[in-house]
Amino acid sequence: LQCMDQVVKYCGAVGLRVILDRHSSLADNGWKESLWFIPNDPYYTENQFIQDWQMLAQRYAGTYISQVTILKPYHYNKYFRSMRVKGTTVIGADLWNDPKPPLSAWGWVGPNTRDWRIAAQTAGNAILAVNSQWLIFVEGLGTNGWPGSDLTYVQSNPVVLSMPSQLVYSVHELSQDAYNQTWFSSPIYPSNLRALWRSRWGYLAENAKSPIFVGCFGTFFVNAVKDDQWLTQLVNYMNGQFTSDGVSDLKAGQMGLSWSVGLQDIGFS
Image 1 (cartoon, rainbow, N blue to C red):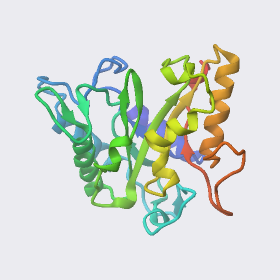
Image 2 (image 1 turned 180 degrees about the horizontal axis):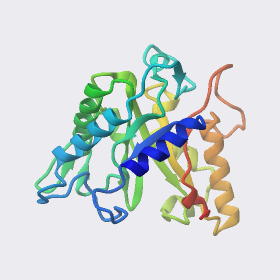
Image 3 (image 1 turned 60 degrees about the vertical axis):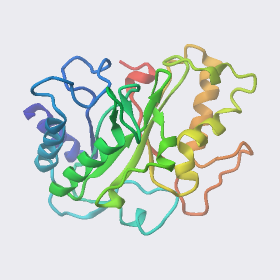
Image 4 (image 1 turned 180 degrees about the vertical axis):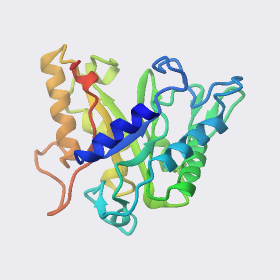
């Protein structure tokens, strides 16, 4: 924690804002952990998951300096206008990286399955109880080995926080280099991508349902032509070109989706 304190301190000094993301319970890079806790482990319990986030929310709570607009979606309503984080370096929690089916589900439970929506809602409200300024980032489920990009379930089972203005849904979008999928080999590729993104998560932004944060996207450019097509389409979509006519669908003064990019995903060391 002391090391992270120094990183956060430096980020604040140079004007950067930080979103903390939990990738793993164990120090093993987390790729084999489908749940936000470790079943039958005496320490890495669901309750410990919540307590850890509360501890961090309190540790990095900022004092009032100024009203800083962190996420300014292209659409405005009474919730999104109030999305502010008072002068603090750490602005929120990306609760769990890439919740993975079949152990992680959305809106239902089974003998060995846990409801990620309820877990995110419970953890998010616990965080807001100790730090009402943080944004709560909730990632979608993975499908067919594809991480964190399916938010179709939100239509019928949204996350409900005690402070709705602090909720941000987050998705990951990667090229075929990372996770090859059937849509990359479609005969109409890349013109099929917008409809895919719209059905999985883009509808929330297009219909002004909720803020969307593209928390990770990138490519290794193994297939330079196809990967460039994919990246161009995604950047255009995030900038408000929701159709293929090459014209932005945003109104004057509106902004596109917020995003971050993982350096490892695009081939940097």
